[in-house]
Length: 342
Image (cartoon, rainbow, N blue to C red; front, side, top):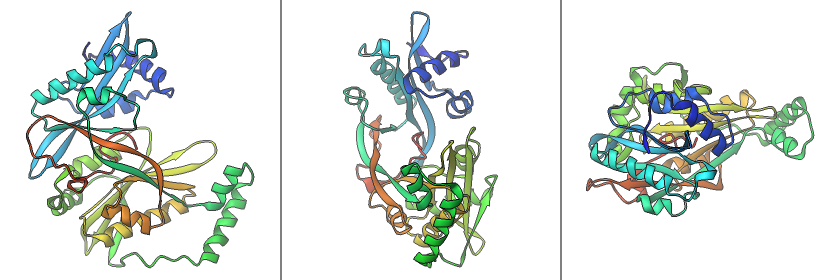
């Protein structure tokens, strides 16, 4: 067991592809774990038989904890080779991560768990705090139905969706005409201004300032990122970030984040409706997002035509200190952008 060393990426990539059964992106790994040089260790491996057979990493995130900004680790890419499971490797690597980041002064570690960790979760000290759930909206009902049935043609689906929209007479009156939404390609000072205006309303939240928007959404490699900025009277009042996915059969979008003041329902509503229209014009079949049930954002997603699925994650923490963290779901603002599950 040891900390990451330059050159380990080949072995980490081979382990990733064995465990997760999908291609390893060195660019995304570098962006997530190595781009920001850290004095504190944030990646560990287990070696056996001359190869890497275990891995645990944390993605450092700046968090606002009440009135203080602290570095918080997000546990990610935890994996053990199938031939070496049930030998305590994941527990040992996670214990090392806990010791390093507790000594560094982090208040807690965060993670998004789907239920596959078993007893390791309890041994490492994970405590579920709240549930985040997937909500989804079908933007092209005809294309969705035809694909599920294995019939139809893209032009026929477009034609059907056009007439479904006309027959439904759907024209949203939910948007605030005083709010203007534009797409941005580089995070400017308006995101710093927005964070300064809105952050005081939250108790526990990842720092969503200019640097966060640029790194988390616009600099992420290998994806089609989009960031929408809302302004009211030329002042920023919110943003929405999403990315587009494509395969041979369809195209869909995932909303990574939607950030406004918690009581600015007009900004939330306008951003969501603008995003749905933009995605529909680009012929996306559907759009999904992770939200906290019964939160203001969850209610606006439901009003915008999203329905709640039965899938989601337990947002959990490992407490490291006596800092008042907050045990109620209402203390937290979490969208999934804090981790790598979206």
